[in-house]
Image (cartoon, rainbow, N blue to C red; front, side, top):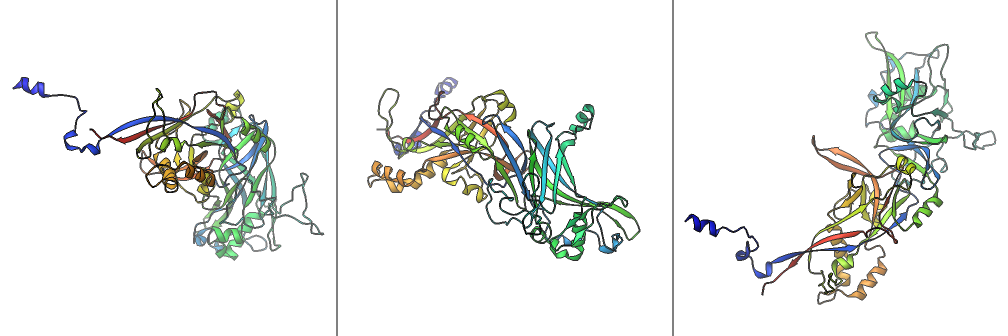
Length: 533
């Protein structure tokens, strides 16, 4: 009995389920690879909203030209927060005119990271806006608040705007600040100790001067004898007590109190700051009901809930020259070059192919697409300076060319049907897109009714007509992006928002019309019905 049992056991599973499966339900898998064409695609501007704001000027070693970035920001107030922004007025000390006052006030720029030389001396300019940049519109990286007339400028008696030494309009609140990312006044040992505590994260701009509001009222600045004072801080305090309704939310605050600020690099080169947020901090003193004197502050902060824009200027001629290079393609930010990919849908779906022996293979119109995968490989940086200064983008979005702008305008999310986030391999320096079946099927589903004959075959003339009417029908674009992640547990997180990347990054990808390396291919697996006769 044991001998019979052993001899009856067989590990061959090739016929497993045959007795339960009809002949017409049998299937086989087939894998094929198809060549892909890519090219660089220059973009003049991208949607200016981003996770971060960028401020600075840096030389791009690939184009040997400068990239500058400035930004505009507004400030957030939570809905119906007005009753608790400052203490009750009767608790506040009064000046000689029996009015409340601020001890001091500063603008603080919180720097999350930087690119370039931390010792490079830089100089920025902070200007108040005359009116808020309207929400509800799309602002691209070429939007310049200064050129568009949003700065609150001073005028002479003839009505002409007063200019500074650089021929810029002088704002009512117009401050200049010199800085370095690292504090040169500290010893090397102290800087090394403080570096772990992120000592260089703040750039502080004191608002000590008198301030004149739009109604013509002037608020006194810092008084040396008294040791306190800030025109802008006092303006915020007094406006709050006179019109608490102006502080109801971000919209009323921007419209009636603080339209926002524009920060611009006016001197220096070598550093680009990544700004996490910008703050207005008002320092003041009040006395509690128990006669306790309290020195405290109130912070008004820029957040994702209010409008913030980046204004980027780079050398368009240098970008055009890079675009002409056809032995590779580029992913270059900010507002630089993307990689356009042409998917061989006709080969994947309907054109008859030949195998290695020259035998003709059947069309795949009636086959089921099981998987489709593309991997894009990086090339080495052009020079050592590029590799050190220019970051490698790690998050890449693939989306249809026709959605290049609408995707970000609509705050869309990758759906793994038409839009995908790539998987970055930092060791092999590759970007992989492993589940492109949805994209190929969506392209074919849209096209199929317009190109099929009544007998189920593809009409090649209709295909050509369709291509002429829809020139981007099979084209997608690789775009570097920044992601906001939301933690769903201790170990997992999900993508909650996607922005155009605004950091200074660049990478060359294998590809281009005259690619010298192995061709880029899409690897496809089909499920094919098989009938046993």
